[in-house]
Length: 483
Image (cartoon, rainbow, N blue to C red; front, side, top):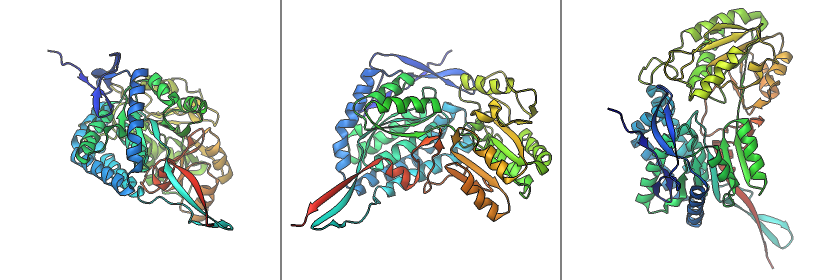
């Protein structure tokens, strides 16, 4: 007996709909490599409908007092908690992620982030009113930008959806959100959860809309005349395309793109603990994280000792099925990603050495072994380009200046870390490293109160924090005569 694939649908103006032309795409479970669902392949008619719904709902949502928007977001957070097991199960099927880690490491932060932005809704800040010209008083209004076209990635489909919609809604915008074409299931479930909250509180359903589809769907969204802002988390290539498309009608753009985080380990660091923590930060989520600790720079005097410890930690790291509580990570997201990661290893130069891993695991699904590569040079492809897989590279440096040179010598600038017991050195490095985040003696923790976003080809704009909230607002000067 064959099981009929589950049918996912778009969520537009409070209705779950198929694509207008009936087109669908198969959704594959990366654990098995087999299709388990179909999703709409949305086209121009679907984009028009979603944008019209968001535009129609915008005046109502914009004009609510912040406390009312806060109430909605707090209800959404509560509903996420109540549906936590459904979210975990759906996301695991979506991505192959371990159930236990998804339950502990994703759902609580998501709920916390929604609640943070619920609070931010009531904390709009600006300069105080005052007289800057004789006989005139000036005030600043901070307003929502309008309809936001948002595109989320496949590495954290559920959490990145939260990072998109929560600040946008908190600021008074309405949303059309597109999940990745390979991972739409959890976003459709989020739409179901939000639908229930909007129904309970009596708000227009067009405040939040979900469109499933591919790159063409995303392009149609960004180029549509309705949105005032386009926000994407994705590859550098995708971000550049979005920026180019949005420039044609001067849409505001928010981009969180790739990363190649340097992890600078000095000779005075606790090498055993550093190796253990870096292995977790590099292999978590199969290395499919823009901030992953995948590019280690270690002082030459402790290079061999550190490599031995890191290779041991990697060899002890386990990948496997979602219900195995001992695994750190599951499969890569899709067949193309598996081929990309394997290709980096196959193309390694002759001077490189694979210390451990470097191969696919099993013959079903998209699993790849935890991998450590040494002997690399700064201009090697695997040092310069984002692998987005469970692969950690190691280079050595001789002094602080060379460490900074190597660390900054890539086109990405999202995150970095420094491992040392020397406080002054840590402060010097945090200033010199050209990255949006610098961790010291740790790597990868994020909190809702602090910004996440990079420089250079890692994009611009911030997620999380008050800065991420402000990105979804516009500033208006109002001047009145006192005469």
